[in-house]
Length: 348
Image (tube, rainbow, N blue to C red):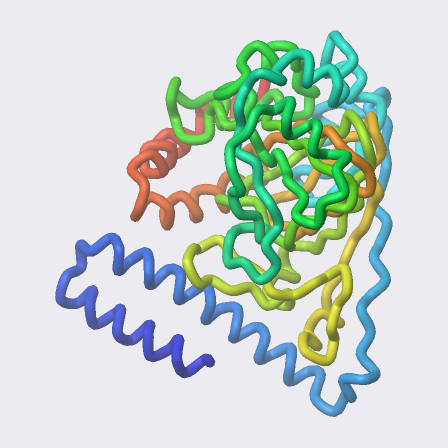
């Protein structure tokens, strides 16, 4: 496999020598380099496993994610202890203060049941991000009715932007102090990602998306209002050991099932550093940039989430935007705004 990608890299360099301004070729080269870097690390780790029988390999026991009360944690402490060190954490005692009314699935039915939204379904083996493909568009009330149906093809309202689609609901939310310095909110009106979050997640019990990494090097938080979610995630250095594929995008997809790891087929999983938590209603989870994760909905659930950029991940975000800008002018505009670091790093 290494040879095939090296041949592709050589061909792309030759193509650029003939037309150095081809953005598509530059983008393809960036994608191929990501796969080559992955294979290089996999080869080195595989050599370290030489002499070990696959039957003796074990999937590591996941570490438990730390839980901290928001009552005793300032925004500065969160940044220094968790965000800047890429350390996940569950924060308690903050979700209750995010809304004036008590948010539940039934409350949202009353508020936005008349609206239509695209819903997704899990397609195992799909090359789509998190193995989630758009199923159809339907009324939110009809989708909520479907949550209790015993259907093998469960539907998922996934990452639906509240500022774009439900501004009245978005206005009910007060973001926790830990994310109020988000650089995305300091960009110009209409900029890429500025209004993408907070977003809404409503899922039936038992639904589990595939392993994925949040895009463009962004940090991520999720506030859970109803139900429980099982999270299994890995530090960013583990990414090559999870067998990422860069087939159609510079964002990886995965074939491995980390909930039921097959170490005979994927022995490098034995060298990963998993962490796990059961997120409870009223809790908020912080996931650092670059952390691959998979989520299982243990109950019918309602959550709100956001991706954000701060001093901890701005350099990685710029790297990803440089690649994305080869295909998306809005990514280039956002990159140019992020180059004005003085206006960004003035923390409130």
